[in-house]
Amino acid sequence: MRLSWKMIQAYAFILLGSLIQAFSMRLFLIPGRLVSGGVSGAAQLINAYTHWPVGLMVLIGNAPLLLLGWRYLGGPRFALRTAVAVVSFSFLTDFLALFLPANGLTQDLVLNSLYGGLMLGIGLGLVYRGQATSGGSDILGRILNDRLGISISQAYLVTDSLVVLSAGFVFGWTQALYGLVMLYVSGLAAELSSEGTDVFRTALIVTNQAEAVTQSIFKYLERGVTILPGTGGYTGSPRPVLYCVVTRAEVNQLKTLVREADPGAFMVIGTAHEALGEGFKPLVR
Image (tube, rainbow, N blue to C red):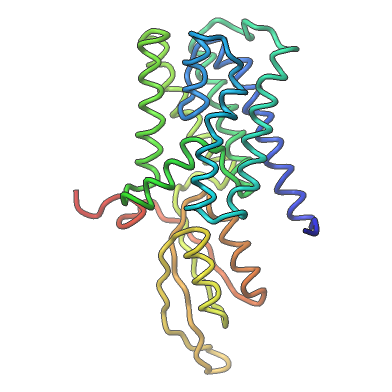
């Protein structure tokens, strides 16, 4: 596999994002007993009873999810970058414990939830920009969406909130409530650092390789595509126009898929404030 500049840039985003997330865990979340949701949050809860390393448990907990992701979410394209994100985050979380103060920077829960959530979200957004996920609830969210039709945003909310709320039984309900605040802040920061303020993106793709682009989107993003008939205004020749809606975390991967299938394609990325239907919010509640 030849390394291109874009690939190097993507892995740089993944490693930097993992480092920022690890700093967030060690400086704010673990000392403040604020559970971050997903596998890392579950690892914090187990650590409270066993004192097993948080990073090691994150790695162990993500292993079966990576195998599921390999099977259901795109094979090696999905698994390799996500595996790098998971392994680097797990290693750095335990490695930084050797150098950073065990009590963090502050005992103030407000500061820990705000700054911890901000750093966690920025790191997660950079991982998204590297066309990877952080594992854990990201993988579960995609699988729940694929198998049960639950929207990805709702799946994230369910998987993360259950872990954060369970922290109330371990660390107390004050920490659990601040954990929900931290989770909200991290979500906003992830959106801003990955793709901006809007959650969903619409894409219009004019291509001569409509079948190849469509199949690639089906296989790797598992998103619906509508093929519209179009006619070139200058040439007068027929040209298919593809329309699809993706999340802000999938935009960079969509660009890569289109470029690989048809380097001469023309694509316009727009914004959508709400998406209703399969893969998103239900149209009828």
